Length: 175
Image (cartoon, rainbow, N blue to C red):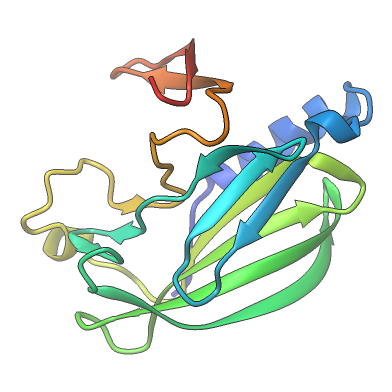
């Protein structure tokens, strides 16, 4: 059984609507993604200025930081989705708690729009999050993408959802 987060489809639908309504991205606001396929570390810059750094990968109580999740390999691929043609980098994660691949994490960059990066997580086998979450204080079953609160070259604006009934609030990366 393959488990996919349904939110990707909703996200893609929302992004298609947003992309259709916005002008092309200028070089000063283009996003640049760098992924280290050995460690999983990633950074995103805007117009050449550091903006976001990847932080933690988690499935239940397992994490990359404490060594429970490890990268087995990586691959590059090309495809097309409703947002257009993309280049994808996929990391294949394994764990001590489960045989085979536990998780695939994919980063998509779009050739026709440098203002979009899509993150996707795919679980090739069913997860029992009740048993995997033992000892984890997180309410979420997985974390990807996780972002560090340490800022890049400057503290750029962002937005976030907070609370049980989330609402969109402005912030900066460090807050």
